[in-house]
Length: 140
Image 1 (cartoon, helix red, strand yellow):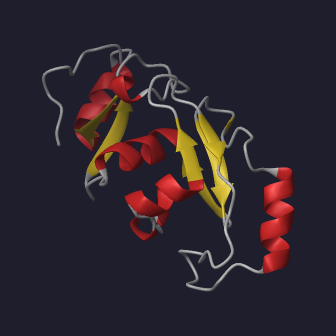
Image 2 (cartoon, helix red, strand yellow; image 1 turned 60 degrees about the vertical axis):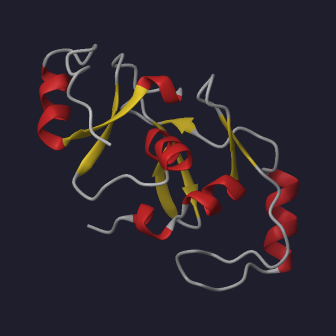
Image 3 (cartoon, rainbow, N blue to C red; image 1 turned 90 degrees about the vertical axis):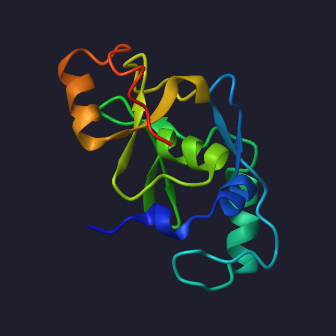
């Protein structure tokens, strides 16, 4: 399975999204001429930049999917808001780690509600109702 996050640096995500750590909300930033698609390495066309900025710049970037997670599409790749938020703030996700919503609310992407855990711990939290059961087992 392809991991789109490996192509997205903290700096690139900060250039694309305005992330409010207190509310967990994201808005699209204006795209600039010369911007490169991180998945293809190709420069974005001027026509694309004009259309994107007119339609999306300054607007909410993520919407809820059927499972309750906030998602968006970036150059054809689906991204999850909680993973983007964590990477914007901390710069890395860790290959074998998951970003967990501490309070169990999948749409609450405030940085204080997110923590890095192992897959095993994430499953334990999910089966126990997720709310605070792993407070002392977080990983950086």
